[in-house]
Length: 58
Image (cartoon, rainbow, N blue to C red; front, side, top):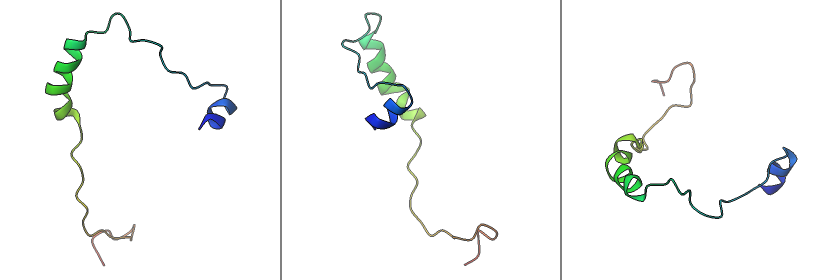
């Protein structure tokens, strides 16, 4: 990954500390209330067709 980033002139960096403006309480509320609604439901695996022209046929 580092080589790919370096090739495009980017660097891999992590913030040294959290932003001063970050509101931890608001973040926790968002995670608890909003994220479950936003998160996409997991697809259940089932039979599928490999045909692009007739998806319902076998």
